[in-house]
Image 1 (cartoon, rainbow, N blue to C red):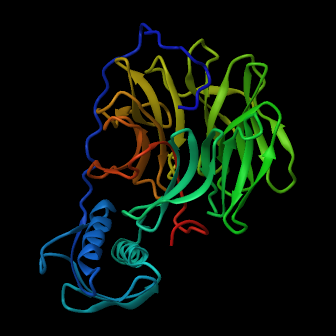
Image 2: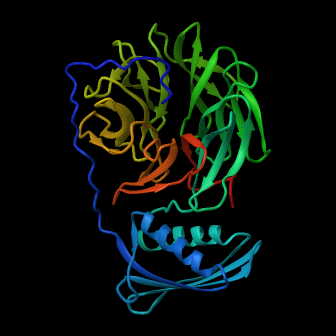
Image 3: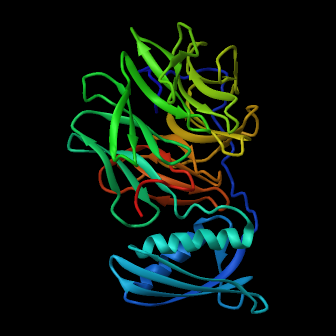
Length: 397
């Protein structure tokens, strides 16, 4: 969680301690069948393709002859140079797609085809080719890593002996903003995939929790000076910084609506952390819901209709989803004691979050249609996930 007020673990009267568990959305998936033959990696590639299809929440694998479409795939080549040849036929045997994909890794070819398969049959974007960046901590070393949705080793973007935290991937895919303490303070940095380097953009005080506007021009962030935290906005074009909140309370963890006209944030102005919505240029904020005694880390969905957030329930922290008006609250997680920092996939059908459910904080992905959970990170402690856009300018290929 990004909330800065430590030690607030009191139980508040008047708040519900029981919430309806989220159930699978249950939208009917489009059944498809696939076969994949070829080089020595074909068996692993088939497993990955079936995972990509089933985890899409839009298509699902079926026995040959039972689906609305059948894909015949042939993988050839070797490490560093692969070709994936694909023929997709419809129910009546009509050709829907005939294409070759080439690249240095078979995983990236499988992801590209899976996303095109999803779009071909549904008209919706897939997320197989996206990546999730997160912070990893191991033996006192902090790393910002980007992980594709497969078993490949994550790419290390930035590493340091000093704390790195709260990364945020830009909507255009070209940059990741994050906080680093390498100069002894919490400064805001911007990593550019084009330049393969990070530069400091904000200093002075403690600067954290960056959040991008949809057009990638502005970054909202939390600046804490002398113990007071407020939301500020940085203009990446001009370098100007504007203060958006000016209260004695703690204001942090902003997230923009898809239009960029509003933001949701965390504030303790009533004595404990709650969620508030205000115009992105600042002004009066309205409370978004009254169900919890402690909530934080809001994330506005790409469709604009829902908010994901972390809240304290029965002594543990779990992920919840609600309508923007605070209604229809559903508890998404039930395992573990510390589930936090939810972020939406770029298509809105999945959530990434960190959880201690397996004994060490790790990054998990949740597909909302069937409530399928996938553990993304392994090994060292991992937290603060941020999801790439559909089109990625940097990261694992």
